Length: 217
Image (cartoon, rainbow, N blue to C red; front, top):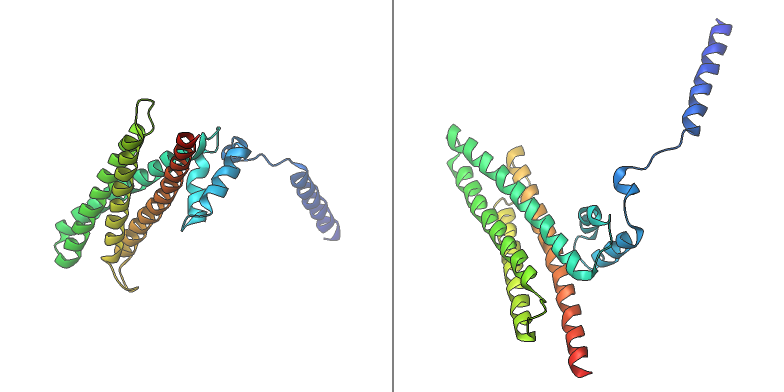
C-alpha cells in the first residue's frame, strides 16, 4: 500500500510540474489587441456613467489603430445598435409567446410597449449613425457640421429615453424570470447608449474646439 501511495504521489507531482511548465497561450482577443488602442479606449471610457461596460464593449475594436474620438463614437453606436437589435428580437419572441398563451394580458401589453420603444431606439440609432457618416466631410461648412452634431445628439438622446422607458415599465424587484430578463436587456441597451452619447459629445466637443482654433488662427 505504501509503495502504491508513493507511486501515485510521484505521478501527481510529475503532472503538476508539467502543467506549471507549460506556457499559457493568450486568448485571441488579448493576443491581437493594440496596446495603444486599448489604453485610449480605457482613458476615453473613464468619463462615462458605465466605464467598465464601456471598456468591455469597445475592447473588441482594440485590434487596430483607432483614429481618434470619431472612430470611438462610431464603434460605440455600433455596439448600441447591436444590443438594441438583439433586445428587439428577444422582445418580439416573448410578445409572441404571451399572445399565444393568453394568460397575462397586462404583461403582454407592457412587453408590446417595450417592443415599440426598443424598435424606436433601433431606428434612432440607425439615423444617428447615418448622420455621423455625413459629419465632417471636406465640403461641409461649420453650420452644416453643427446641424449634424445637433441631429446625432437628438437621435441618440431619444434612443436612450426610449430604452429607459422600457426599463421603467417594470418597477420593483419582485418579477418573473421572463420580466427580469427583459428588464436586464433593456437596461443594457440604455447603458451602452448612454456611453455612446457621452463619447459622441466628447468627439463633438473636440471637433468644435479644433474648428474654433482654426478659424481664430
